[in-house]
Amino acid sequence: MKYFFFTNSSDKNDPVTLPFYSRRSKGPGAEEGAVTVDVLLGDRVIETADGPEFLGTAALMESKLCRKGNKLCLYDGEKIYQFPMGEIVGIRKINQGIPAAGWNKKKSPKEKRYQQAGVMLFRDSFYGLKFFYAIEFLHGGEQYRLLFPAYELQKIREMTTQMTLEESGSISDEIRPSYYWKIPKNAGSFFSPYADVTFRARHPVAYWIIISIGITALLLPGILVLFFTIRIPGSNYNAVLLLGFAGGFVVGLGLFNLVAAWLHQYLGHIFTIICLLAGAGMITATFLVLLH
Image (cartoon, rainbow, N blue to C red; front, top):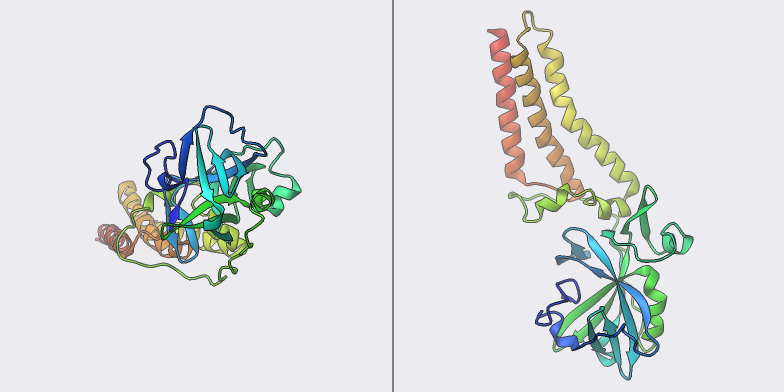
């Protein structure tokens, strides 16, 4: 599956956009009957069992869409792309939350119609989509998807009246951890403020329960070590107490990582084992010094 328009669309030699590239245009996309729509962009999109997953934050880009004969035309502000109507398979709903940025509409994302279309807010500001849609193409034996937010669905359907709307079934609500040995290549995205959007959109209650358990697992070991060490007679060595608390915190990192697996943000068994062994060693050293 290839995701049209998620790469650098300014490069006409892009292997994803090239098959549909038509021509450069200096005009405002002034094809007759063109409408303004948002499409989803991203630095990288991968295919998962649940559908496309953005590695990072998706962006909304305003584009012009129109029908010209038997082709669907998309104007990105610089170039026009043409999609043969006969190659369009259908429109598919992707029941997956994604972090997104770049609100382009004049009206507020708090409006009811945008909320019903899966727009997510944080402190009244747009920060993601609970679900979105994809126009699916079959071109040259390859499958392509053009992704767009749900609030543009009506415009897309009006432009593609010959298509049969096809929605995917709801994604399973089953919550399962994701375990593996090595740190994943996309681990950097786990530290993004938008990293939890997908899980939170699907499981809002379970999300806060898991977060609470994770914070407890992170802080409790250090607190317990400090609680017991300060009760040892003569434990007035601040540096030693600090070592014990730090060891408990490192153990907490390992435990927190295990909990994070339920959010699909696991850093791997190797990271967990290192944290647990290193933290346990620091705690052991602390008690040996204090009990000596």
